[in-house]
Image (tube, rainbow, N blue to C red):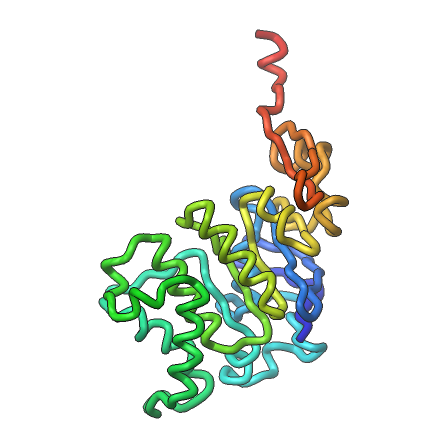
Length: 262
């Protein structure tokens, strides 16, 4: 299943947060959305999973406008893990993951054996089967993040939208989760702040700056020293990972005019 944004803009309180964003993620591809803080990554993704309504343009799934679909149809197509997700209630881990099954039956319907199997598989995939009966409020931030990813996987989507999915995760679990997602066969659109993880995992990347798309292509094409200096304000040297051949970035401060006169 493909997803595309066609000239999407988002306006709030008279201010344009995202302007004329056009990009696509085709079936089974892992596509990264990159940019500095405040560049519009999260806003763009919120328009994709319909928390925010675009003020212009459209989000299309297999060429069909997302807004023309019912809520249940959208939920069966797209699962999202937002950057911030809080709960005041101490649901168990298994109860939170089971919420991912709601698009597949009525709100009051009982869980079937098939539903439970999907939930068990999802928890095993993120390495949390042993915590199924724990309350989510007793978990670390990283464990909660993995629970939310398990919930999204249990939803059986065709498209996975992830907003900073590696927040709170240690490096081992960052690599495990992104490798799992990359190998899932799902179409993935993810906002990532770690450029080296993006370079290692993404088939394509799109860079936002001040709400506008400024570069698109493969990590090799996009993550160049000139772009990183202009958009992120850092000096970067690009090297090849010895095992994968993927680009990896070594960062240093970008010398400022004040530095040169010091």
